[in-house]
Image (cartoon, rainbow, N blue to C red):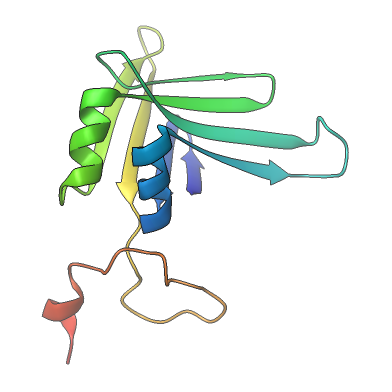
Length: 128
């Protein structure tokens, strides 16, 4: 699961096997290690829950993004590329969350294993 953070936005991109794990177990976890000590890591988790609206939280070096079961079920079983939500932080700020299926790049990149990624839907239209 790839994590992209820019300002007040979070984007998670999942491969085919991660989507399958999310569908079967209701959760996908990753960790970023910045060092060898226990507090030098950040966990990020995508999980399903019994709720109505996607949300996120962060505490104890762990970011959790919650997706309602009904939204998750539709997303993992259809061609729907992503799900998103904008959460009001205060009167002036929002947190934008986007969760997407991870597509293969249109141009090969050295050192990048794309075998688990979804076929790019633009691939056929952009071939020479």
